[in-house]
Amino acid sequence: MDSAEYERKIASRFATFDQDGSGFIDREDFSVAARAVLAEFGVRARSDKGQAVFAGAEAFWQGMAGIADVDGDQRVSREEFVTGAVKRLRDNPERFAEIARPFLRAVIAVASEDGAEPGATPAAATRVLRVLGTPPEPAAQIATALDADGDGRISEDEILTAFAAYCGVAAPDA
Image (cartoon, rainbow, N blue to C red; front, side):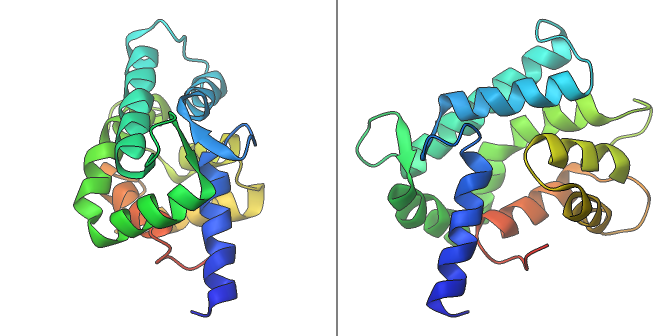
């Protein structure tokens, strides 16, 4: 991967987290993402599932800040993201799973349309991706690809593996 390609991918990954477009990743970006997911699935913020999504978003933010907020200003700049988060997440994907799992688990619970089986359907995953800013066509393609074992359900492990690769700039573009 050449330097220009790497920079383009980093910018894309940074924008995924910078939900409000402020040029920084901060706690509010994770709250915006949580509210968007809950609104998409009609889940109240004060419900158990809603509280789990917000708690997971906070845990994700704390983990991200812990690995990338070098200057301690409670926000992650693009430079901090590139030098901190991407490098550390690529070097230690288990750390990524540790910080992302509570949020992703809670989102899967919200997105599980039938609630009977573990995991979300590709259709539900498409909805999550769309409310988080992925254009419709790539969202559907990505969601389908997330179901790595083809069982019609996207498991927590399938999502964590794919998301860690995406954030670590190891995944191909959609």
